[in-house]
Amino acid sequence: MRDSSLPPHDWPELLPGWVWLCGAGPGDPGLLTLHALNALRQADVVVYDALVEPSILDWAPRAEHLYAGKRGGKPSARQRDISLKLVDLARDGKRVLRLKGGDPFVFGRGGEEAQTLIQHGVGVRIIPGISAGIGGLAYAGIPVTHRDVNQSVTFVTGHDQSGDTPGSLNWKAIAEGAQVLVIYMGMKHVDQIATALLDAGRPAEEPAAVVTEATTPRQRVLETTLGRMSADIAAAELAPPAILCIGRSVLMRQVLDWQGLLAGQPPRDLDPLGRGRPAEVS
Image (cartoon, rainbow, N blue to C red; front, top):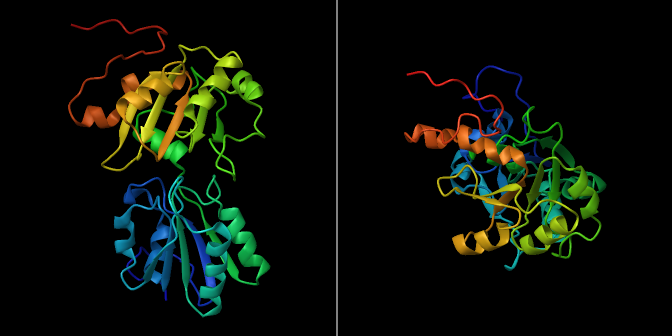
């Protein structure tokens, strides 16, 4: 049952017995893709996670909404149970939309869920979404790449399957090779992460930023340094979900804080990197 309210296009049809794994973006409903909206309008069941902005579900008024969120330190469904629930719903002939915050294949366990579905003979379609590590930082006025700053960016997760800091990561290599480092789900272990980077030679005065509840009306942005990041997070009483960014691109927020500009705040520095400041015009 295709959505006739969308512009003319050969929109795919969500068929009974299929599961579409869809990224809901970092929070702002306007960051959904048109394929995501098409899926929401067709679904019989939407299985959504904890990072999906609630108002997005309003675009699926005819669907049953099933919460399957996973948040650190809180009672959560097991991943295996979520995956098998998707299988059961598909086998019941439902049009199933699995809605995940950000992008389902970027630290979102979408690959695990898709693998389980395919192993059980369930048809799958993947709909990418805007990842918080890109879209969330953009809303904070922090470009993950800027040709005067970096030619690479490294994305890592702040915890592994056990909930601990990933032991498989070579923090020394990351510290030496990552021009700009973006860390997902790093708030719980921020002290250990910062210590590992500092011990590996990363400078304590390196610019850093923390963006919580990115792209939502509740967004908060902390500008700090790698050496002060842990203490400043505690002092500001910030809480997850959050994206951490470490690197000189954080300085670009001084001129690119577009939300602040919309609110009438002037840029703090037109050339935060200090590369050839323009002459003043009176």
